[in-house]
Length: 140
Image (cartoon, rainbow, N blue to C red):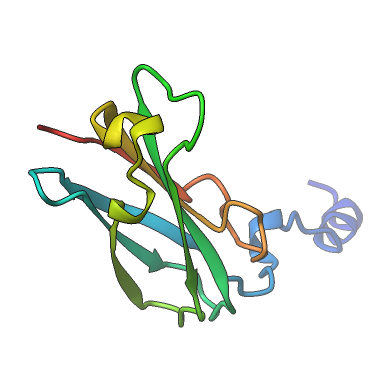
């Protein structure tokens, strides 16, 4: 190889874009959940982690009770306010649906699934927005 060409080539380097560090961001991850739907209980549980590299501020969690058939009125949903979550920490949520039980939603008898949605209104700028939901069956 020509030494002049080698010197010219030595001035350039390919730097992969992954070498540039992005600002650290939180990442809310709904990892698991379960329901206790045995009478008289109508309780949903969920575990939410911040797997990101930064703390996050306050956010909302929706617990949606998916029905079949779907009620015309009084669709069962709970909202939980979380004050924030430090990087690497988790929060356990336990909420009762008894407060939204009503004859217009068959007293929750048609609930087949619970969907937990962390930060459903995108209040938190996260490194990954695709892992904020987890759904699980409600077994009789």
